[in-house]
Length: 66
Image: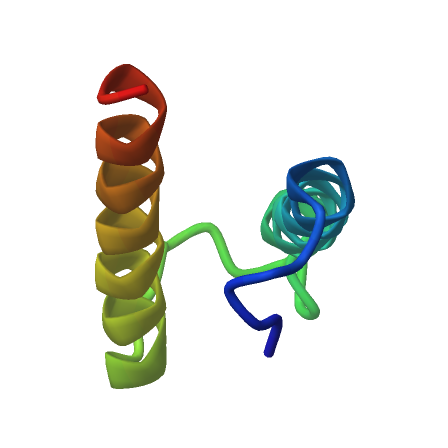
């Protein structure tokens, strides 16, 4: 976890890298491609989506207030 004094450019690069990793995992083909039905989201996925949405909102607020 970064502290409040971290360089914004470094923090932005770290965030971008993390989001790229998340996108790569999300775009990966399913482990069993023979299953056509999309299973319900696992609780951890729902939590991850909520946390990312919250982070995006906080980042948007921070960028628009400066």
